[in-house]
Image (tube, rainbow, N blue to C red; front, top):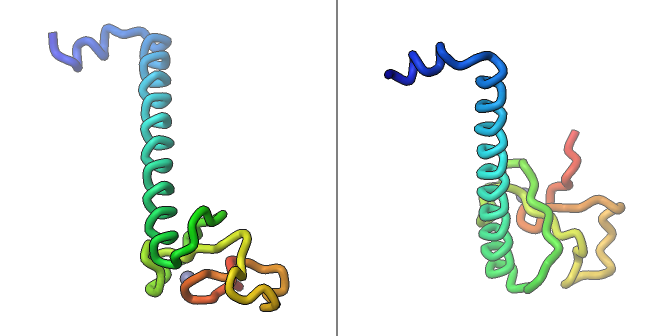
Length: 102
Ligand SMILES: [Zn+2]
């Protein structure tokens, strides 16, 4: 019996159940991939800025200066210059642009 025949024999509620399980599996896989990406980014950025255990936030802006290719913000920023006034906005560690851009 072909997969197509099996699909046609399945009731709609069986299809829903099967597709739900598949979607759940994909979500778990996605979340695991995202965790892996995040861990690698964290490692790469810490190696680049030579500050361990940073509370980093990975942005979505393209950043040619960043080792990850995207902007990175340090949530406990200004290790080197605690007096630097950032107006309460996080700035990218590599290009200095704020997280919020108009
Ligand atoms: Zn940047």
